[in-house]
Amino acid sequence: MKKLLITGIIVLIASVSMNAQDISKNALGLRLGDSGGFGAEISYQGRLSSTNRLELDLGWRNGKNYDGFKLAGLYQWVWNIDSGFNWYAGLGGGVGSYSFNDNSDSNNGNDYNDTFVFAAGDIGIEYNFDIPLLISLDFRPELGFGNKLYDNNDLGLDIALGLRYQF
Image (cartoon, rainbow, N blue to C red; front, side):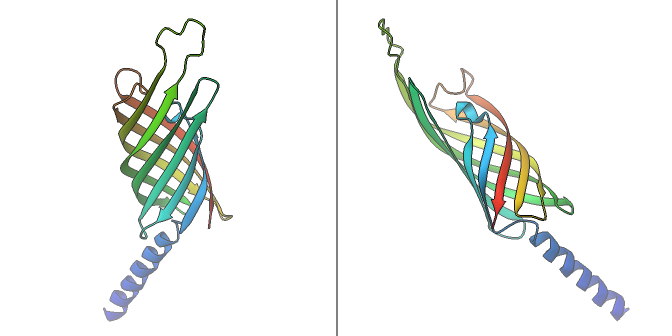
């Protein structure tokens, strides 16, 4: 009976330590999606524990008539599906700012700028390759406050592909 109990404890400890290895200490890369009109984001993930991490994303846009930035932070829980495959869910929020300048000759009041905050959820799936590459697909609904960015309903639905280097 003692041998069975000791074997069970060793298997439990080994499985916990194997799950801890599935989340890299750091990952840096791109999150390619709609992101409320901000397109690609620079994305950083930092491990907080064997099953939790923090994700920070910075997106910016710059064009002839507009420019802006958006910073998002999410706390994520990560669960192992199978070796290399994980799924995750998270909560967070962020802040951003943008401006639009109508440079036409008939400038009829179409210039505006705004700063906004938003709350966000996140759910996704990822694959951790044997090489230091992490690829993910996630869905991030965002509820924005104080902006015209999310049309008129203040809700943004963002689907993105993430490619990150792990170190």
